[in-house]
Length: 372
Image (cartoon, rainbow, N blue to C red; front, top):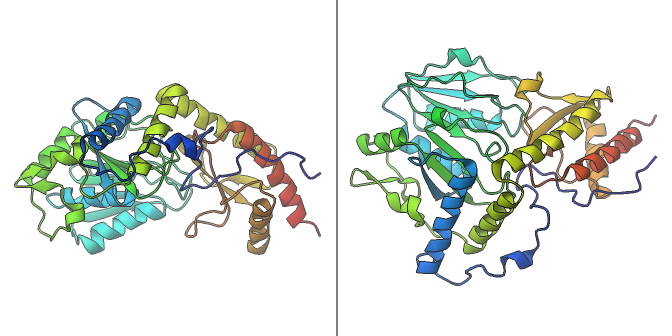
């Protein structure tokens, strides 16, 4: 039967992701609109956002955190354009964005000693093939495949190259082994449900040393530059970004960080994401027409949950439209380059009650589109 109750929040998009529970625009009333981002009070807010990020994620004291333009894409490109070149490069990729980074290393930076270690959607590559004498670029969680790297045990402590990690759909939902990571990037619009266009760049002392000892051979646009007179531009990591940020978005990010604190910080965020995934796991176990895209549980993402479903393309399109029309689930179709299916965001800004309610509507919608 058609469910009688709808999710209170039907936003299951994987980016921009759902705002945290209780959010209203009134929360942003104190934002520093019309003020220079270089004035004292604005710089304090910017610096506070960086310090709060470091605190909640448990980033080591000797790592630095900066705000950069261009969302996660800008942050990962900034890292690659500034750091890559003196060594060979291995790119671990198992979904569309990882393939993009591999393409950029090969065709934009034109690094000849480059190895792409790849796998099809739903699988993790053979990580034993990675050469850690090289620099290594990877996505920690495949937003478009629902596959995650389960841990950092395979990354040696005595590696010679740098590890550069796109973790935009992993941070605030998974434990990051910081001793295995030299550079990490993410964006606000993912796990904390912030707004788009701003990226975050986390760098280890090893990465800083690379910046200050190596000059890339290619021209560097201003918006990507991290170096000035052979030194890292530390202003970026002290509340003075390269270009003008939106102070409205900054305030929104700060409020999301404070909300995260209120539910128990990183542990609370991970717990909520795992509970949301568990709702879908219980559903999949009892319905033979739906399954996870990842081939094994240990690599199953708890944020971008990707599913395959026994429908032809027309039926799948009809199901997605029906969920949207009923206000039961928005933006849940799989990514355009991924295998046809469904993708539900299950990060901590989503409540498990809404996931459970949405699944009732999914079951009903499946019945509707498969009626003979």
